[in-house]
Image 1: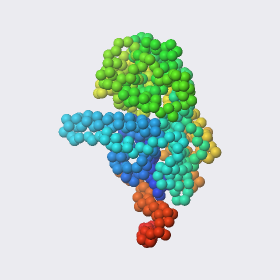
Image 2: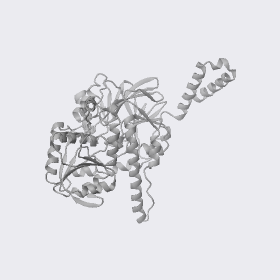
Image 3: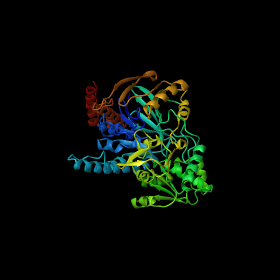
Image 4: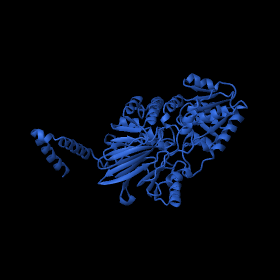
Length: 530
Protein backbone atom coordinates (compact mmCIF):
# COMPACT_ATOMS: atom_id res chain seq x y z
CA UNK A 1 0.00 0.00 0.00
CA UNK A 2 1.19 3.48 -0.87
CA UNK A 3 0.19 6.87 0.53
CA UNK A 4 0.86 10.13 -1.32
CA UNK A 5 0.55 13.45 0.49
CA UNK A 6 -1.21 15.58 -2.13
CA UNK A 7 -1.77 18.43 0.34
CA UNK A 8 -2.00 19.16 4.05
CA UNK A 9 1.72 18.34 4.40
CA UNK A 10 3.75 21.03 6.20
CA UNK A 11 0.86 23.39 5.53
CA UNK A 12 -2.51 23.86 7.19
CA UNK A 13 -4.54 23.88 3.96
CA UNK A 14 -5.16 21.74 0.87
CA UNK A 15 -5.67 18.49 2.78
CA UNK A 16 -5.69 15.50 0.44
CA UNK A 17 -4.19 12.03 0.79
CA UNK A 18 -4.02 9.36 -1.90
CA UNK A 19 -4.19 5.71 -0.82
CA UNK A 20 -3.22 3.22 -3.51
CA UNK A 21 -3.49 -0.58 -3.21
CA UNK A 22 -3.47 -3.42 -5.72
CA UNK A 23 -7.24 -3.14 -6.07
CA UNK A 24 -8.15 0.48 -5.37
CA UNK A 25 -7.15 4.14 -5.38
CA UNK A 26 -8.99 6.44 -3.00
CA UNK A 27 -8.59 9.99 -1.71
CA UNK A 28 -9.17 11.12 1.85
CA UNK A 29 -10.25 14.75 1.28
CA UNK A 30 -9.64 16.95 -1.75
CA UNK A 31 -9.07 20.36 -0.20
CA UNK A 32 -8.25 23.75 -1.62
CA UNK A 33 -5.02 25.55 -0.73
CA UNK A 34 -5.59 28.89 0.98
CA UNK A 35 -3.37 31.68 2.28
CA UNK A 36 -0.21 33.02 0.71
CA UNK A 37 0.19 33.11 -3.08
CA UNK A 38 2.82 30.37 -3.06
CA UNK A 39 0.17 28.01 -1.70
CA UNK A 40 -2.87 29.14 -3.70
CA UNK A 41 -0.90 28.61 -6.93
CA UNK A 42 -1.00 24.90 -6.16
CA UNK A 43 -4.75 24.89 -6.86
CA UNK A 44 -3.99 25.58 -10.53
CA UNK A 45 -1.51 22.72 -10.96
CA UNK A 46 -2.30 19.63 -13.00
CA UNK A 47 -3.01 16.55 -10.90
CA UNK A 48 -0.05 14.28 -10.18
CA UNK A 49 -2.40 11.31 -10.62
CA UNK A 50 -5.10 10.38 -13.11
CA UNK A 51 -8.47 11.46 -11.59
CA UNK A 52 -10.32 8.90 -13.73
CA UNK A 53 -8.40 6.14 -11.90
CA UNK A 54 -9.63 7.27 -8.47
CA UNK A 55 -12.35 4.94 -7.20
CA UNK A 56 -13.72 7.07 -4.35
CA UNK A 57 -13.26 10.14 -2.18
CA UNK A 58 -13.79 9.95 1.57
CA UNK A 59 -14.51 13.44 2.90
CA UNK A 60 -13.83 14.26 6.56
CA UNK A 61 -15.84 17.50 6.62
CA UNK A 62 -17.15 20.40 4.57
CA UNK A 63 -14.58 23.13 5.18
CA UNK A 64 -13.09 24.30 1.88
CA UNK A 65 -9.52 23.40 2.85
CA UNK A 66 -10.76 19.79 2.90
CA UNK A 67 -13.47 19.79 0.19
CA UNK A 68 -12.77 22.74 -2.10
CA UNK A 69 -11.11 20.91 -5.03
CA UNK A 70 -13.79 18.23 -5.41
CA UNK A 71 -15.46 20.05 -8.36
CA UNK A 72 -12.05 20.35 -10.06
CA UNK A 73 -11.53 16.60 -9.51
CA UNK A 74 -14.89 15.84 -11.18
CA UNK A 75 -14.09 18.26 -14.00
CA UNK A 76 -10.83 16.34 -14.58
CA UNK A 77 -12.57 12.98 -14.94
CA UNK A 78 -13.32 11.57 -11.48
CA UNK A 79 -16.55 9.53 -11.64
CA UNK A 80 -16.54 7.64 -8.34
CA UNK A 81 -18.57 8.15 -5.18
CA UNK A 82 -17.86 10.84 -2.59
CA UNK A 83 -18.56 9.38 0.85
CA UNK A 84 -19.40 11.76 3.70
CA UNK A 85 -21.78 12.18 6.59
CA UNK A 86 -25.22 13.51 5.74
CA UNK A 87 -24.52 16.84 7.46
CA UNK A 88 -21.24 17.25 5.54
CA UNK A 89 -22.99 16.57 2.22
CA UNK A 90 -25.72 19.08 3.12
CA UNK A 91 -23.10 21.74 3.87
CA UNK A 92 -21.14 20.95 0.69
CA UNK A 93 -24.25 21.71 -1.39
CA UNK A 94 -23.91 25.22 -0.03
CA UNK A 95 -20.14 25.63 0.17
CA UNK A 96 -19.03 24.11 -3.13
CA UNK A 97 -21.54 26.14 -5.13
CA UNK A 98 -20.40 29.27 -3.29
CA UNK A 99 -16.76 28.39 -3.99
CA UNK A 100 -17.57 27.91 -7.69
CA UNK A 101 -19.26 31.32 -7.76
CA UNK A 102 -16.11 32.87 -6.28
CA UNK A 103 -13.98 31.09 -8.92
CA UNK A 104 -16.19 32.48 -11.72
CA UNK A 105 -16.17 36.01 -10.26
CA UNK A 106 -12.39 35.90 -9.86
CA UNK A 107 -12.03 34.61 -13.42
CA UNK A 108 -14.10 37.50 -14.82
CA UNK A 109 -12.13 40.08 -12.81
CA UNK A 110 -8.74 38.67 -13.83
CA UNK A 111 -9.80 38.31 -17.46
CA UNK A 112 -10.96 41.93 -17.59
CA UNK A 113 -7.62 43.04 -16.20
CA UNK A 114 -5.78 40.84 -18.72
CA UNK A 115 -7.79 42.18 -21.66
CA UNK A 116 -6.71 45.73 -20.76
CA UNK A 117 -3.10 44.51 -20.99
CA UNK A 118 -3.71 42.69 -24.27
CA UNK A 119 -3.49 39.28 -22.60
CA UNK A 120 -5.83 36.28 -22.80
CA UNK A 121 -8.79 35.06 -20.78
CA UNK A 122 -8.30 33.52 -17.33
CA UNK A 123 -10.50 30.44 -16.96
CA UNK A 124 -12.09 29.61 -13.58
CA UNK A 125 -10.66 26.73 -11.60
CA UNK A 126 -14.14 25.21 -11.91
CA UNK A 127 -17.67 26.40 -12.57
CA UNK A 128 -21.03 26.11 -10.85
CA UNK A 129 -21.82 23.40 -13.41
CA UNK A 130 -18.79 21.39 -12.23
CA UNK A 131 -19.84 21.88 -8.61
CA UNK A 132 -23.41 20.81 -9.36
CA UNK A 133 -22.18 17.64 -11.09
CA UNK A 134 -19.92 16.81 -8.15
CA UNK A 135 -22.85 17.03 -5.72
CA UNK A 136 -24.59 14.20 -7.58
CA UNK A 137 -21.72 11.88 -6.65
CA UNK A 138 -22.14 12.29 -2.88
CA UNK A 139 -23.18 9.26 -0.84
CA UNK A 140 -24.69 10.35 2.50
CA UNK A 141 -23.90 8.24 5.57
CA UNK A 142 -24.17 8.50 9.35
CA UNK A 143 -21.65 8.13 12.14
CA UNK A 144 -20.67 4.54 13.06
CA UNK A 145 -22.15 3.15 9.82
CA UNK A 146 -19.61 0.83 8.15
CA UNK A 147 -19.32 0.95 4.36
CA UNK A 148 -17.15 -0.37 1.55
CA UNK A 149 -15.36 2.63 0.07
CA UNK A 150 -13.67 0.60 -2.68
CA UNK A 151 -12.59 -2.97 -3.25
CA UNK A 152 -10.64 -4.14 -0.22
CA UNK A 153 -11.22 -0.89 1.74
CA UNK A 154 -13.81 -0.78 4.51
CA UNK A 155 -14.47 2.52 6.26
CA UNK A 156 -16.46 4.09 9.08
CA UNK A 157 -17.00 7.71 10.17
CA UNK A 158 -16.61 8.70 13.83
CA UNK A 159 -17.54 12.11 15.26
CA UNK A 160 -14.59 14.53 15.18
CA UNK A 161 -16.38 17.21 17.25
CA UNK A 162 -15.00 19.99 15.01
CA UNK A 163 -18.05 21.26 13.11
CA UNK A 164 -21.40 19.67 12.42
CA UNK A 165 -20.90 16.46 10.43
CA UNK A 166 -17.10 16.46 10.85
CA UNK A 167 -15.48 13.05 10.95
CA UNK A 168 -12.55 10.96 11.97
CA UNK A 169 -12.09 8.23 9.35
CA UNK A 170 -11.21 4.64 10.24
CA UNK A 171 -10.03 2.55 7.29
CA UNK A 172 -9.48 -1.21 7.25
CA UNK A 173 -7.41 -1.92 4.15
CA UNK A 174 -6.76 -5.37 2.67
CA UNK A 175 -3.72 -5.43 0.41
CA UNK A 176 -1.33 -8.23 -0.64
CA UNK A 177 -2.97 -10.64 1.80
CA UNK A 178 -2.54 -8.30 4.79
CA UNK A 179 -5.03 -6.18 6.73
CA UNK A 180 -3.93 -2.73 7.90
CA UNK A 181 -5.85 -0.16 9.93
CA UNK A 182 -5.41 3.52 9.08
CA UNK A 183 -6.98 6.35 11.07
CA UNK A 184 -7.28 9.89 9.68
CA UNK A 185 -8.12 12.37 12.42
CA UNK A 186 -9.65 15.00 10.14
CA UNK A 187 -9.81 18.19 12.22
CA UNK A 188 -10.11 17.24 15.89
CA UNK A 189 -12.47 19.49 17.82
CA UNK A 190 -12.34 20.75 21.40
CA UNK A 191 -14.42 19.26 24.18
CA UNK A 192 -17.54 21.01 25.49
CA UNK A 193 -18.26 22.95 22.32
CA UNK A 194 -21.85 24.19 22.14
CA UNK A 195 -24.37 22.23 20.06
CA UNK A 196 -22.13 19.39 18.80
CA UNK A 197 -20.67 16.33 20.55
CA UNK A 198 -17.11 15.86 21.79
CA UNK A 199 -14.58 14.03 19.56
CA UNK A 200 -14.94 10.25 19.52
CA UNK A 201 -12.30 8.19 21.28
CA UNK A 202 -10.47 5.63 19.12
CA UNK A 203 -7.96 3.23 20.64
CA UNK A 204 -6.25 1.27 17.88
CA UNK A 205 -4.49 1.83 14.55
CA UNK A 206 -1.43 0.65 12.70
CA UNK A 207 -0.88 4.08 11.15
CA UNK A 208 -2.34 7.33 12.47
CA UNK A 209 -2.59 10.53 10.41
CA UNK A 210 -3.17 13.39 12.84
CA UNK A 211 -3.77 17.10 12.24
CA UNK A 212 -1.56 19.66 14.00
CA UNK A 213 -3.17 23.06 13.37
CA UNK A 214 -2.58 24.16 16.97
CA UNK A 215 0.06 21.55 17.76
CA UNK A 216 2.46 23.99 19.43
CA UNK A 217 0.12 26.21 21.45
CA UNK A 218 -2.61 26.16 24.07
CA UNK A 219 -6.02 27.80 23.90
CA UNK A 220 -7.24 30.14 26.56
CA UNK A 221 -9.82 28.95 29.02
CA UNK A 222 -13.30 29.18 27.43
CA UNK A 223 -14.79 31.08 30.39
CA UNK A 224 -11.97 33.65 30.21
CA UNK A 225 -12.52 33.93 26.45
CA UNK A 226 -16.25 34.49 26.88
CA UNK A 227 -15.54 37.19 29.48
CA UNK A 228 -13.04 38.92 27.14
CA UNK A 229 -15.57 38.75 24.30
CA UNK A 230 -18.23 40.34 26.53
CA UNK A 231 -15.93 43.15 27.69
CA UNK A 232 -14.69 43.90 24.15
CA UNK A 233 -18.25 44.08 22.85
CA UNK A 234 -19.75 46.15 25.68
CA UNK A 235 -16.91 48.69 25.76
CA UNK A 236 -17.27 49.19 21.98
CA UNK A 237 -21.04 49.37 21.51
CA UNK A 238 -21.29 51.51 24.66
CA UNK A 239 -19.20 54.13 22.87
CA UNK A 240 -21.21 53.90 19.68
CA UNK A 241 -18.64 51.82 17.77
CA UNK A 242 -19.12 48.71 15.72
CA UNK A 243 -17.74 45.28 16.57
CA UNK A 244 -16.58 43.40 13.49
CA UNK A 245 -16.07 39.64 13.87
CA UNK A 246 -14.59 37.77 10.89
CA UNK A 247 -15.98 34.28 11.21
CA UNK A 248 -16.15 31.03 9.30
CA UNK A 249 -19.69 30.65 8.00
CA UNK A 250 -19.92 27.05 9.21
CA UNK A 251 -19.40 26.25 12.86
CA UNK A 252 -17.83 29.39 14.29
CA UNK A 253 -20.69 31.73 13.37
CA UNK A 254 -23.25 29.45 15.03
CA UNK A 255 -21.03 29.12 18.12
CA UNK A 256 -20.86 32.93 18.39
CA UNK A 257 -24.65 33.21 18.08
CA UNK A 258 -24.93 30.67 20.91
CA UNK A 259 -22.67 32.72 23.22
CA UNK A 260 -24.30 36.04 22.26
CA UNK A 261 -27.70 34.49 23.03
CA UNK A 262 -26.34 33.58 26.49
CA UNK A 263 -25.28 37.21 27.02
CA UNK A 264 -28.73 38.36 25.94
CA UNK A 265 -30.45 36.00 28.37
CA UNK A 266 -28.13 37.27 31.14
CA UNK A 267 -29.36 40.83 30.57
CA UNK A 268 -26.63 42.14 28.26
CA UNK A 269 -27.04 43.17 24.60
CA UNK A 270 -30.75 43.95 25.06
CA UNK A 271 -30.67 46.88 22.64
CA UNK A 272 -27.63 45.91 20.56
CA UNK A 273 -28.38 44.88 16.97
CA UNK A 274 -26.49 41.78 15.85
CA UNK A 275 -26.04 41.09 12.13
CA UNK A 276 -24.90 37.88 10.49
CA UNK A 277 -23.93 39.36 7.14
CA UNK A 278 -23.21 36.23 5.16
CA UNK A 279 -25.70 34.41 2.94
CA UNK A 280 -23.65 31.24 3.44
CA UNK A 281 -23.70 31.54 7.24
CA UNK A 282 -27.46 32.10 7.09
CA UNK A 283 -28.00 28.95 5.05
CA UNK A 284 -25.47 27.01 7.14
CA UNK A 285 -27.40 27.87 10.30
CA UNK A 286 -30.54 26.42 8.72
CA UNK A 287 -28.63 23.24 7.75
CA UNK A 288 -27.31 22.85 11.31
CA UNK A 289 -30.85 23.13 12.67
CA UNK A 290 -31.88 20.38 10.23
CA UNK A 291 -29.25 17.89 11.49
CA UNK A 292 -30.20 17.18 15.12
CA UNK A 293 -28.54 13.74 14.89
CA UNK A 294 -25.24 15.61 15.42
CA UNK A 295 -26.34 17.51 18.55
CA UNK A 296 -24.95 16.82 22.02
CA UNK A 297 -27.06 15.90 25.07
CA UNK A 298 -27.14 19.47 26.38
CA UNK A 299 -28.58 20.81 23.12
CA UNK A 300 -31.21 18.08 23.00
CA UNK A 301 -32.14 18.93 26.61
CA UNK A 302 -32.42 22.61 25.72
CA UNK A 303 -34.67 21.78 22.77
CA UNK A 304 -36.82 19.52 24.98
CA UNK A 305 -37.34 22.42 27.39
CA UNK A 306 -38.75 24.55 24.58
CA UNK A 307 -35.66 26.73 24.18
CA UNK A 308 -33.63 27.00 21.00
CA UNK A 309 -29.83 27.34 21.31
CA UNK A 310 -29.57 29.85 18.46
CA UNK A 311 -32.42 32.13 19.55
CA UNK A 312 -31.32 35.78 19.79
CA UNK A 313 -34.14 38.36 19.46
CA UNK A 314 -31.81 41.16 18.29
CA UNK A 315 -30.27 38.98 15.58
CA UNK A 316 -30.84 39.69 11.90
CA UNK A 317 -29.57 37.60 8.99
CA UNK A 318 -28.81 39.60 5.84
CA UNK A 319 -28.74 38.01 2.42
CA UNK A 320 -28.82 40.80 -0.17
CA UNK A 321 -26.03 43.22 -1.08
CA UNK A 322 -28.40 46.11 -0.40
CA UNK A 323 -28.95 44.90 3.18
CA UNK A 324 -25.20 44.49 3.65
CA UNK A 325 -24.46 48.05 2.50
CA UNK A 326 -27.14 49.39 4.84
CA UNK A 327 -25.33 47.96 7.89
CA UNK A 328 -22.34 50.26 7.35
CA UNK A 329 -24.67 53.25 7.07
CA UNK A 330 -26.28 52.41 10.42
CA UNK A 331 -25.53 54.89 13.22
CA UNK A 332 -24.53 53.69 16.68
CA UNK A 333 -23.12 50.47 18.05
CA UNK A 334 -23.70 47.07 16.48
CA UNK A 335 -22.15 43.61 16.20
CA UNK A 336 -21.38 42.40 12.67
CA UNK A 337 -20.40 38.76 12.08
CA UNK A 338 -19.29 38.13 8.51
CA UNK A 339 -17.31 35.68 6.39
CA UNK A 340 -14.70 34.73 5.47
CA UNK A 341 -13.00 33.85 8.74
CA UNK A 342 -9.49 34.68 7.43
CA UNK A 343 -10.71 37.83 5.59
CA UNK A 344 -9.63 36.44 2.22
CA UNK A 345 -12.98 36.99 0.47
CA UNK A 346 -16.61 37.82 1.09
CA UNK A 347 -18.41 40.72 2.72
CA UNK A 348 -16.03 40.91 5.69
CA UNK A 349 -13.55 42.82 3.51
CA UNK A 350 -16.13 45.58 2.95
CA UNK A 351 -16.83 45.83 6.69
CA UNK A 352 -13.09 46.02 7.42
CA UNK A 353 -12.65 48.75 4.78
CA UNK A 354 -15.41 50.76 6.46
CA UNK A 355 -14.29 50.23 10.07
CA UNK A 356 -10.62 49.24 10.35
CA UNK A 357 -9.51 52.89 10.31
CA UNK A 358 -11.97 53.96 13.00
CA UNK A 359 -10.50 54.14 16.56
CA UNK A 360 -13.96 53.58 18.07
CA UNK A 361 -14.34 50.24 16.24
CA UNK A 362 -13.19 46.81 17.42
CA UNK A 363 -12.16 43.82 15.31
CA UNK A 364 -12.38 40.46 17.10
CA UNK A 365 -10.67 37.41 15.59
CA UNK A 366 -11.94 34.10 16.95
CA UNK A 367 -10.32 31.61 14.57
CA UNK A 368 -7.07 30.50 13.01
CA UNK A 369 -5.46 32.95 10.56
CA UNK A 370 -3.26 31.21 7.98
CA UNK A 371 0.00 32.65 6.67
CA UNK A 372 -0.48 35.16 3.87
CA UNK A 373 -4.10 36.03 4.71
CA UNK A 374 -5.43 39.51 5.44
CA UNK A 375 -6.50 38.31 8.86
CA UNK A 376 -2.97 37.13 9.69
CA UNK A 377 -1.57 40.56 8.70
CA UNK A 378 -3.98 42.35 11.01
CA UNK A 379 -3.50 40.11 14.07
CA UNK A 380 0.29 40.28 13.52
CA UNK A 381 0.18 44.03 14.15
CA UNK A 382 0.22 45.58 10.66
CA UNK A 383 -0.27 49.34 10.86
CA UNK A 384 -1.69 49.49 7.34
CA UNK A 385 -3.26 46.89 5.03
CA UNK A 386 -4.48 46.91 1.45
CA UNK A 387 -8.17 46.13 0.82
CA UNK A 388 -9.57 46.30 -2.72
CA UNK A 389 -6.39 48.10 -3.77
CA UNK A 390 -6.81 50.82 -1.13
CA UNK A 391 -4.39 51.37 1.76
CA UNK A 392 -6.33 51.31 5.04
CA UNK A 393 -4.92 52.40 8.40
CA UNK A 394 -5.38 49.94 11.29
CA UNK A 395 -6.69 52.23 14.05
CA UNK A 396 -9.41 49.94 15.46
CA UNK A 397 -8.78 47.85 18.57
CA UNK A 398 -7.73 44.31 17.61
CA UNK A 399 -8.56 41.25 19.71
CA UNK A 400 -7.52 37.67 19.01
CA UNK A 401 -9.47 35.37 21.31
CA UNK A 402 -8.15 31.82 20.94
CA UNK A 403 -10.53 30.08 23.32
CA UNK A 404 -13.26 29.84 20.68
CA UNK A 405 -11.24 27.69 18.31
CA UNK A 406 -12.97 24.60 16.91
CA UNK A 407 -9.55 22.89 16.72
CA UNK A 408 -8.05 21.01 19.65
CA UNK A 409 -4.91 22.66 20.98
CA UNK A 410 -1.59 20.91 21.72
CA UNK A 411 -2.82 19.29 24.93
CA UNK A 412 -6.16 18.37 23.38
CA UNK A 413 -4.45 16.65 20.46
CA UNK A 414 -2.04 14.81 22.78
CA UNK A 415 -4.93 13.70 24.97
CA UNK A 416 -6.87 12.40 21.95
CA UNK A 417 -3.79 10.60 20.60
CA UNK A 418 -2.97 9.10 24.02
CA UNK A 419 -5.82 6.61 23.65
CA UNK A 420 -3.78 4.86 20.92
CA UNK A 421 -0.96 3.95 23.33
CA UNK A 422 -2.03 0.32 23.50
CA UNK A 423 -1.65 -0.13 19.73
CA UNK A 424 1.46 2.10 19.36
CA UNK A 425 0.77 3.29 15.79
CA UNK A 426 3.29 4.98 13.55
CA UNK A 427 2.11 8.59 13.36
CA UNK A 428 2.17 10.97 10.41
CA UNK A 429 1.74 14.60 11.49
CA UNK A 430 -0.26 16.52 8.87
CA UNK A 431 -2.42 19.64 8.39
CA UNK A 432 -0.21 22.14 10.18
CA UNK A 433 2.31 24.81 9.30
CA UNK A 434 5.79 23.29 9.02
CA UNK A 435 7.27 24.52 12.30
CA UNK A 436 4.08 23.58 14.15
CA UNK A 437 3.96 20.05 12.72
CA UNK A 438 7.63 19.49 13.53
CA UNK A 439 7.09 20.74 17.09
CA UNK A 440 4.05 18.50 17.57
CA UNK A 441 5.91 15.47 16.19
CA UNK A 442 8.54 16.02 18.90
CA UNK A 443 5.79 16.18 21.53
CA UNK A 444 4.30 12.89 20.31
CA UNK A 445 7.73 11.25 20.62
CA UNK A 446 8.65 12.69 24.02
CA UNK A 447 5.26 12.47 25.75
CA UNK A 448 3.63 9.43 24.15
CA UNK A 449 6.69 7.55 22.84
CA UNK A 450 5.19 7.39 19.33
CA UNK A 451 7.26 7.17 16.17
CA UNK A 452 6.17 10.41 14.49
CA UNK A 453 7.06 11.71 11.04
CA UNK A 454 6.21 14.95 9.22
CA UNK A 455 5.76 14.20 5.49
CA UNK A 456 6.58 16.56 2.64
CA UNK A 457 4.21 17.82 -0.04
CA UNK A 458 4.16 15.29 -2.90
CA UNK A 459 5.87 12.57 -0.86
CA UNK A 460 4.88 8.96 -1.57
CA UNK A 461 5.50 6.36 1.10
CA UNK A 462 5.14 2.60 1.12
CA UNK A 463 3.58 1.09 4.25
CA UNK A 464 5.48 -2.00 5.34
CA UNK A 465 5.10 -4.70 7.97
CA UNK A 466 5.62 -3.99 11.69
CA UNK A 467 4.24 -0.46 11.24
CA UNK A 468 7.29 0.62 9.29
CA UNK A 469 7.32 2.73 6.13
CA UNK A 470 9.65 3.71 3.33
CA UNK A 471 9.75 6.93 1.32
CA UNK A 472 9.58 6.03 -2.37
CA UNK A 473 9.69 9.50 -3.90
CA UNK A 474 8.85 13.17 -3.53
CA UNK A 475 6.97 14.09 -6.67
CA UNK A 476 8.01 17.28 -8.42
CA UNK A 477 5.54 19.49 -10.26
CA UNK A 478 4.65 17.90 -13.58
CA UNK A 479 5.61 14.38 -12.55
CA UNK A 480 2.96 11.70 -12.11
CA UNK A 481 2.41 9.34 -9.20
CA UNK A 482 2.33 5.72 -10.27
CA UNK A 483 -1.02 4.37 -9.14
CA UNK A 484 -0.67 0.89 -7.68
CA UNK A 485 -4.21 -0.28 -8.35
CA UNK A 486 -4.34 -0.32 -12.15
CA UNK A 487 -7.60 -0.42 -14.08
CA UNK A 488 -6.55 -3.77 -15.59
CA UNK A 489 -6.19 -5.48 -12.21
CA UNK A 490 -9.49 -4.06 -11.02
CA UNK A 491 -11.27 -5.23 -14.18
CA UNK A 492 -9.82 -8.73 -13.85
CA UNK A 493 -10.97 -8.86 -10.23
CA UNK A 494 -14.43 -7.67 -11.27
CA UNK A 495 -14.74 -10.41 -13.92
CA UNK A 496 -13.59 -13.05 -11.41
CA UNK A 497 -16.23 -12.00 -8.91
CA UNK A 498 -18.94 -12.13 -11.57
CA UNK A 499 -17.87 -15.64 -12.65
CA UNK A 500 -17.94 -16.79 -9.03
CA UNK A 501 -21.50 -15.53 -8.64
CA UNK A 502 -22.58 -17.41 -11.77
CA UNK A 503 -20.94 -20.62 -10.53
CA UNK A 504 -22.45 -20.31 -7.06
CA UNK A 505 -25.85 -19.99 -8.68
CA UNK A 506 -25.21 -23.36 -10.35
CA UNK A 507 -25.68 -21.99 -13.87
CA UNK A 508 -22.93 -24.19 -15.34
CA UNK A 509 -24.96 -27.33 -14.55
CA UNK A 510 -27.99 -25.97 -16.37
CA UNK A 511 -26.47 -24.28 -19.38
CA UNK A 512 -23.54 -25.95 -21.14
CA UNK A 513 -23.03 -22.92 -23.43
CA UNK A 514 -22.54 -20.59 -20.45
CA UNK A 515 -20.13 -23.06 -18.86
CA UNK A 516 -18.04 -23.22 -22.04
CA UNK A 517 -17.88 -19.43 -22.18
CA UNK A 518 -16.73 -19.30 -18.57
CA UNK A 519 -13.94 -21.77 -19.37
CA UNK A 520 -12.76 -19.52 -22.23
CA UNK A 521 -12.85 -16.42 -20.00
CA UNK A 522 -10.87 -18.22 -17.28
CA UNK A 523 -8.22 -19.19 -19.81
CA UNK A 524 -7.96 -15.58 -21.03
CA UNK A 525 -7.73 -14.31 -17.46
CA UNK A 526 -4.87 -16.72 -16.71
CA UNK A 527 -3.01 -15.43 -19.78
CA UNK A 528 -3.60 -11.81 -18.73
CA UNK A 529 -2.41 -12.46 -15.19
CA UNK A 530 0.71 -14.22 -16.46
